[in-house]
Length: 403
Image (cartoon, rainbow, N blue to C red; front, side, top):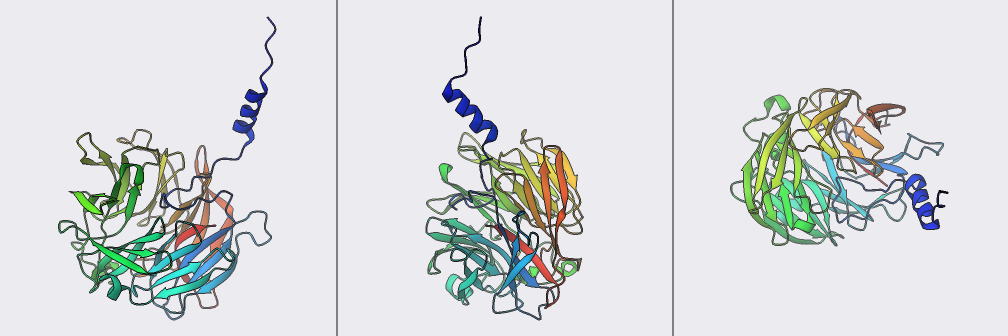
């Protein structure tokens, strides 16, 4: 029998599947943020002046491999003040602004990245955050539709309890939300809109993180995760996990009612998972390297990436069997690897290596690129950005965003 020719529709389908570019599905951003629909051109890096003698700043790095200035710092954006301990930041839902803050100063900057993505500018600085919110140490900037939800590390006085604040995208304070009494510490927040659930974690407040690591009170850290009714902003369940649970990552699959956290002082990964009765179960599922500081996901939900700040390695964990993760690969980009940013196509990961000025043990600061290959993680030798040669001296690079 002569084979029938392929139909035109089937040929089109095969062409799309084989030749179309990979879908972009940036992970670890709020689900309400507009996703980047192309390969990144710029990497934004939030920087602390290392000796706190000069102003903190944002660095703009060229990450377009076709550019003559690839892997170079194009410019810096002066934040107008020093000693802020610039740390985390996040896009507004429409991706036109970045909200960013300082853990020591509690200042918040709103940066315009839409007018000229290659040359962001400070649009507004909020100086009186503790007076507005009753909290200090703004940490996670989590976009909601038209709003920014911010988690804080401490009370206005630098202790606990802490909570959250909501602002409009242009910086108008709306309201505060208090943590439950049995979970007074704050750190990260993550929302699963299709389940109407929010989860929060706890680190340590300013009275502790301003001290050198050797002087920190190891009993003044959180060890709880709290599940919330997202729409009602109401806590539903608090459970003890490992010491210092940090980043929170829901499964990316629609309707999937589980996720993971990394416990920094317990050197572990924990699974949280919804049960039929509406409550959540929490289980330690893996031992990591020393002080797992950051946790990222692959766009296909298959892998977790853990940066071991207490050592020199980044680990790639296969979580297809979520209760029994398997270590797939390890790469060693340098001392104290910390923040990671995985690209939307899941092929690249940018890495920086400062956590806090009070915890860093190295003076060699950098940004490096790791390729995420089918066989595992591989350092890209063609992309290494030295952060020690600014006119003002070295800078501690922390959080990153791509555009």
